[in-house]
View (cartoon, protein in one colour):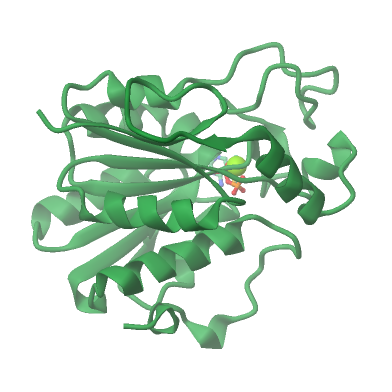
Amino acid sequence: MNYKDYVKWDRMPTTWCPGCAIGTIFKQTAFALADIGLAAEDMAVVSGIGCSGRAAGYFDVDSVHATHGRAIPLAEGIKRANPRLKVIVFSGDGDLVGIGGNHLLHASRRDAGLAVICVNNGIYGMTGGQMAPTTPVGEKTLTSPHGSAYAPLNIQGIVTSNRRHWYARASTFHIAHLQRVIREAVEWPGFAFVEVMGFCIENSGRRLGFKSGHEMLTKLKADYKLRPGAEGLLGERELGVVKHDG
Ligand SMILES: Cc1ncc(C[n+]2csc(CCOP(=O)(O)OP(=O)(O)O)c2C)c(N)n1
Ligand SMILES: [Mg+2]
C-alpha cells in the first residue's frame, strides 16, 4: 500500500491554512496506515467538528464526520457492530477533551477498541481560538486575553488511570516518532490515545507573537524531547508511550 491510496485527491487542497499542523498529522496517519498495509474495507475513520475534524472527509475510506464531541461514541458503535474493523478517531482537543470529555472518560474505562488521534493545538481553532481544556496555564487566547488561569487537563492521567491502557504523546515536529506511535495505536487491540502536540498559526500563534507555522514547529522542537525507554509516566515535556496490557 502507498499513503496516496488513503487520500481523496479530488478534495485537495484541504481547507487547512498554510502552515497548519493538521496536514502533517494527517499525512503521517496515512503513512502509518500504508505501513500496516490496512485495506480500506477493513477500517473506518470518525472525526468530530473542528479544523481537525475535517480529516474524516479527506481519507479515502469509509468515514463519518460526527457531531461536535461525539466522535468517540459514534466510533465505538461502529466497532461494536463490526469488531473486525480497525476504527480510527481523528479529531481536535476541543472536540475530544472539551465537549467530548465525558466520552473519553468512559470509552477509555471500557477499553473500547479504538485508535484515537488527537490534534492538540491548545485551543478551539475553527471558531477563532477560544481557550480549551488543553490551553497551557498563562497562555493568551481569544477568551483569555490576560492568560489562561487554569492548568490544562491531564490527558495522560485520565487514560492511564484505567488498568489496561495505551497512551502516547507525540509532536508534529518529531514525525518519525509520530508515524511509529500512530501505527502502534492502530495495532493495539484496546483503547489507544495519541496526543499529538500541534499548533495553530492563524487563530493562536499570531496572538502569541509567532510569525509563521514554521516558527511554531521550531518551538515544538525546542520544547519536547523523546524519552528513551518506557519507565513510568511521561514528564510534561516528554514524548513517548505509556502502556499496560493487564
Ligand atoms: C454543539 C456545538 N457546539 C459548538 C460548536 C462550535 N464549534 C465548532 S468547531 C469548535 C471547536 C473545535 O475545536 P477543536 O476540536 O480543538 O478543533 P480545532 O479546530 O482546534 O482543530 C466549536 C466549539 C459546534 N459546532 N457544535
Ligand atoms: Mg483544537
